[in-house]
Image (tube, rainbow, N blue to C red; front, side, top):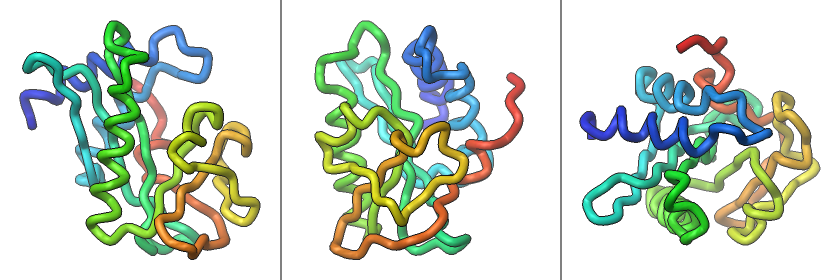
Amino acid sequence: MPNNYEVIEQITIAAFTGKSHSDGTEYLVIRRLREANALSLSLIAETENKVVGHAAFSIVTINRKDIGWYGLGPISVAPEFQKQGIGSALIKAGLSKLKERGAQGCVLEGDPNYYQRFGFRSYPNLIDEKALDAIYFMALPFYNNVPSGIVEFHQAFYTPTHS
């Protein structure tokens, strides 16, 4: 997929440009995850042999341990292809692949109005201390076991930004 790296970055930049919840560095998170060999699952969506979307998944720790949980994000769809179900398809495919790999669940920080449709919701005992607002931090357990504790995304999400 090396040829897609630049395209994925451009789509990610375009998808987040002008969004109030964005600091414009989401593409750098993907780059840093890739450079750290921490991009556990990278899915692209294509339309007519053109990459139009991307979803990144990486391992998260809970109470500083890898217990089989992943984080979703960033996820992006080229602006001209948004609101056509591409992002939803990427999320569903990614969650399915994680489950096939034996993952226990997935977390994210995002709009509850969007992500609840996939089964994500807030769990009071599962906390991301670095989330901008706790209401946006949600989890989707693949089984009945929801751990308690502090969730940390890969350091790539927190590294100081400079392009």
